[in-house]
Length: 556
Image (cartoon, rainbow, N blue to C red; front, side, top):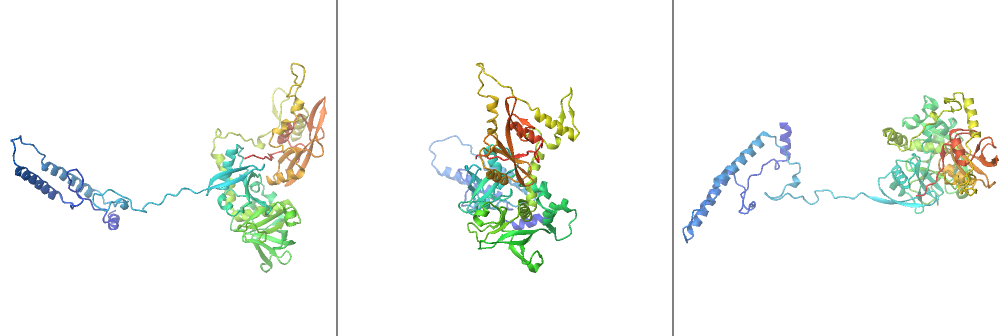
């Protein structure tokens, strides 16, 4: 402690000195023109001042005898100052010398008030903000003021709150380039201001759902076909360790296969054998050979982003509809430096694009995927407004007897589901007092009540429904309902299963003078479409999978 104090004293010698008392003027202020004096000198000076005052009073002519005035004695002032000096000496000798941590607050002269030197404090800087335009699916726009360090996830949370949407962690921000025919979903950790700096004038942000954003963490085998994934080293565990190998930077995963590649500066396309590694995207100049002398670098992963091509055939004369693009961040409007690629099917395109994201961002994607789960684990059961029910907790029940029982036999459960569909509740016809039908007549209500639901998209074409499904993620159970173009009284259920889109027609049927809707030629009947959707969300029936997610459009 003594060595440290000595070193500190050597660094700050001026701050360890204790100031001496300064003589006071008549008004109580320090005299800056006189140097400080010691305690004994102060007593002598006080005595001298008293003597001088007495001499001046004697020198004046005495006009009339007056009573002697009792003046204050300087000896009392001396005693008080001596006590102060002794107390100060005791504190200085008993405590270690501590340097002044703020020497810039000390005044230049003795007795001067503390003052800050110019430039001693950093200038106060207001946090930088930015105005960002975000567009919805219905072409509505909202201007949002954000901080420059706001991420895409934070902006989505803000838009969900302002739009009064249901926060199911599937909302995303889309970077859309209409002049290039490209778009991509921003990663949750990306900075919005940084991405906007690489966008051209007519580019914009879109706010939409994307259920497939982290679906590859749940079902990796559906995204990475076994024939497209190879490893430079021996991999233990096969498909079970697939994601671990992608996230581990020491492993060397490869995605390989044939793709249609557009030649730079030309309109022609060439089918080539490509492989995607951590170091970049390579093409083979000799068949499917992966020897180093036959591999040519096409694109780097660092300063590029992968986009989906939405106008491939029309704008780039693409051979298929499953195009994607590797776009350098410096490219704004020119298409000459875009590396355009086309796959044979949707599964191949999804595999290439997902592998590109995993190889570029790695653990950042997994951390973003875990954030909602970690927040949900911290919430108490009473803090969450919406209670989620797992599909594994739903069981078939039989309430035909006096007490209910769980149906354990799968065949019996399926038979009970069919019977429930046949005997679905029927609404009785309500009549008004005059005998005429009420304005809320069941037959009238059942034909319009579905139009209030988010999953009903009205009069859209088959191509438009497929486009919406693709935009919001090709995951199992994603669906929407629309009006049929061929039959004005029918409806169509558009459903995604195994990254393929299928359409099922819902036909009206009449039974006992009442109108019903059926998806399986009248075997299972429903009084309205809301009952139909509720039933197939719990039962697969004739569908390839249950209805799980519905496509929704939100007005900002």
